[in-house]
Length: 477
Image (cartoon, rainbow, N blue to C red):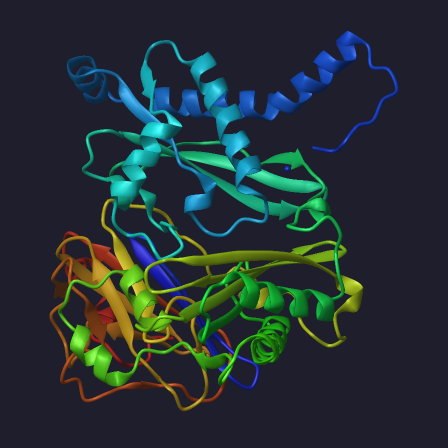
């Protein structure tokens, strides 16, 4: 299981952290004959029939003799289709993505020959409510680790959505509770007009959208007094572009203006989301999960909220989603759609190619490994600020972390000569630098995208690594 962190900046330095081991065209016809309607329906369902067949064939090929004996002894394998809204943000409504999973499940049941049992959406929802590894927004970055060890599921089918001209590319893979990939499908184009996806029926100029979102938040979030912001990220990578930074700053200004007009007293205070050094020291060795870190970032007092945003490039439009949550997970989500022509020139909407694919989830596994920082998930660091990495493993693991800097140099961040023991305790917070380390991570020039990737394993990988990877905190490349 591995976890990736990236850093990037435009006059500032941003960090992107990932965790792991971790839409149809509208056809209008005046009078459609019955066979034409049937053909349209069949065309819509065909990709799901193909994907279901791919998954079933893959599962059959991956089943060993031992698997078949065990399945006969304890009953058929239990398969669940993981809901899209529990993973990374997606550019389509929950109901639409849910309908795709239901179409796939219908096709899987049709192909099933009493070999497998399928977990219903209701039963899966009950299971999800009981798992760990969930953030304040209810997202789970490593579903396998979340349900591993639970007797209700043997195989998870997990979907992936990618933006594509004319719609989205949809694919699925079947993963066992050991993190092994049992079957995969190809990427299928699901025709949909992404530009029509949004909370409002019409798109707006950027200034109008920002002002309306700010006014809506002030009106709909009760008792809002203080906002701690984490910025606006490009959904495909989590990178904060110059556009994301511009909108984030413009939005917080609009929030303060809206607050001063509607609230008595000092209005709304806007702060950068950050855990102070004393609280960092206090949480070392405690049972702290990602949602607990988010709760600390949101603040402890009534009226304090954490703000984070995501945007998608949808052709002529940009879809923006802001989420505000307090330390108990309460809050609101706001969606808006912006005319691309209204965006000031010179702002980058998409990260440079060399870093566009640098992040993402690198797979799933039975070991839960959460990686965040003193500024949370996908944080932004300015030059001169200190970074503290916060990790939490679901069990005792051997941890290895590599850090690739903007200048091209890669170092082994952990274990290192100051902390040579790579075994860390599970279910409690582990910090890098470790307690008593003579070094600290201070952000320095050059700015740009950087990555930190951590691997957790149940066996010590050191004997299998090349000699030059045995040490730490020196240049590797």
